[in-house]
Image (tube, rainbow over all chains, first blue to last red; front, side, top):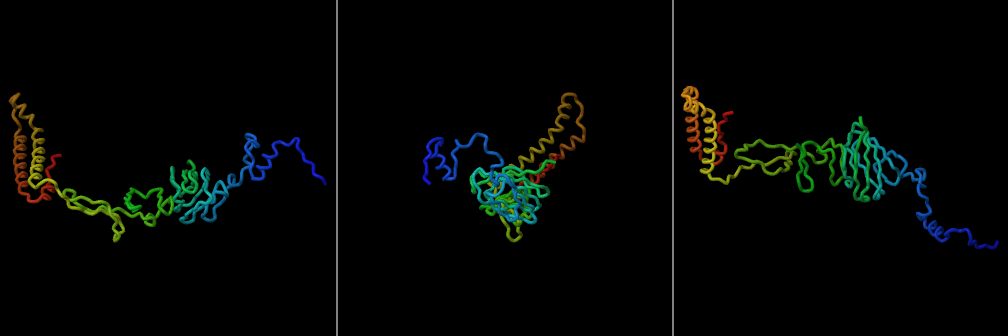
Length: 135
Length: 154
């Protein structure tokens, strides 16, 4: 069958094919207020229970863990600007990577602790704030 | 008081810190301080009139941080120290005299007699002060002068 080259009614064919072929879409192809929560990747929308000690920043938004002994967590796939939440319980010593600077709050082993991590410089520096439920 | 040796210095804390960061990580909720290098600070008994404490050091034998006791070295000579001690002594007695001076002002102004108890007390002050001055002058070392306890009238 012969191919017919279509030239009419195609908007910016070069731009569309170029961007799709490189796995991206230019910002003018996305309408304002169009990215919904449902379109976000699971790394931004899911909670994961930590069975091991590595917190992989690319896998979930919230990580939960109940300490049963002193524990040391490591971080992986950390990029600047990422914000992750650790919900930790257990009255044991919790060790975070040395790159973590605690800016507020203290860990209370008798209750559940929300440790919010903000990556301010990739894997080099993260700031953490620790808080508990108000009683 | 507890302390830890970290990055070449000894850091002191009144209690175990809630957060501690070292080369192994940022530690939260520390319960066993010794496992992180925190040990008690023990202040040895010393006589602060003639001794002082040096910089805090680690004592591996007792697994404590402590201070070496150092004998004081005075910049003043023995005679200078005696002079200062006697001046302080006389200042104390002078202050005690002043408390009853008003009896003598009243005597001058009104002719009312000074109570015998006041007269006796002032005489005793003079005797005591002279005796203490003699005792201070008899001291032979700077440490003795430094240790000499002045009276307290409080």
